[in-house]
Length: 169
Figure 1 (cartoon, one colour):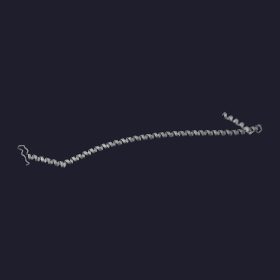
Figure 2 (cartoon, helix red, strand yellow):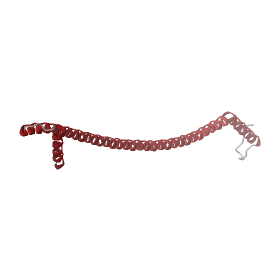
Figure 3 (cartoon, helix red, strand yellow):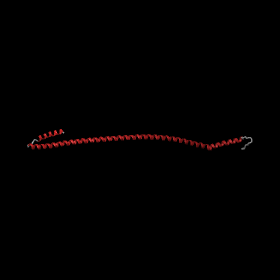
Figure 4 (cartoon, one colour):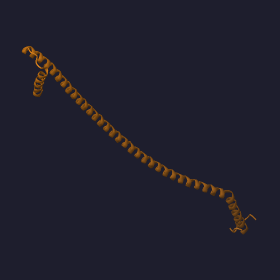
């Protein structure tokens, strides 16, 4: 049955049928044993690669979004810092101006107070000198004239003389 003769270089139909049936059975066994696991493994590998590519795209997209968000936050932080610096400069300028204004007001008040004190002391000095001059002149006049002059008349005379001196200055 499995033999063939080389004499006529012909193949026997029985051998051909047996080889074909053996080939079909072998292919069916390979399909059951090897083909399904290999295709399943290849499909799993293909799915994993596709998932990895999708995951990488998602990661790249998320990274780009985070970079954009950080850039926006950095720009906002720079703007906030600039606003804070400008506000601090303005506050410093206002405080400096206020301090200078307060110092000028205080100097003006001290000057005004000093002028009032000087004027008051001058008035007191003039009043004291009037009294002294009036007393002295009454004393001198009474000694010279040897008679007692009226004190009110003498004070009026001295006051008019001192006012004349004050106007000259």
